[in-house]
Amino acid sequence: MNQKAFQDYYPDDLNYCYGCGQLNEQGLKLKSYWDGEETVALFTPRPYHIAIPGYVYGGLIASIIDCHSTGTAAAATYRAEGREMGTEPRVRFVTASLHVDYTRPTPLGVALEVRGKVKEIKGRKVVVSATVSAHGEICAKGEVVVVPMPEHMAPKGKL
Image 1 (spheres, rainbow, N blue to C red):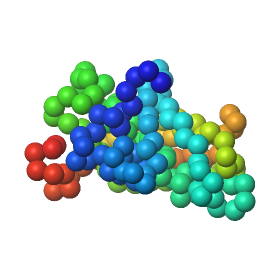
Image 2 (cartoon, rainbow, N blue to C red):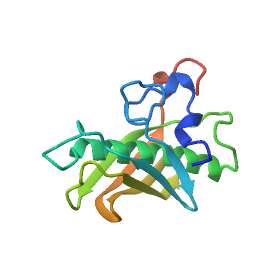
Image 3 (tube, rainbow, N blue to C red):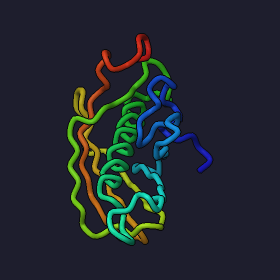
């Protein structure tokens, strides 16, 4: 991708999430982008993301749905406000609710495509639906409700 990922706009002090933090050396470093009105991220699980031989651990799938959705919510909020990502005041979300349905086993060792759609932006909450696909087949569906990060969680002056 030639554009910056949503997560690249997170301030350094808020960029350590295991799933999407670009500064977490041990993390997944998920990167999400706009693709028209949807968002997309590609992620290839490593061999140690195993559940049983040949298949991805479900917690990893939940993590990438979660992190892709919080990034989608931030990007959609900036877009709805007519602002460029990263402009002040900063927008950073945390998960209020995460629901995942696993529709088929997710194969290990192939690129996974995560797609997100904003279902609702209402007041403080954003609802995002997401899918995880392998070889063009949906393996998991999720719905994530996110809310703005509480000020007490952010380093002073960062939100």
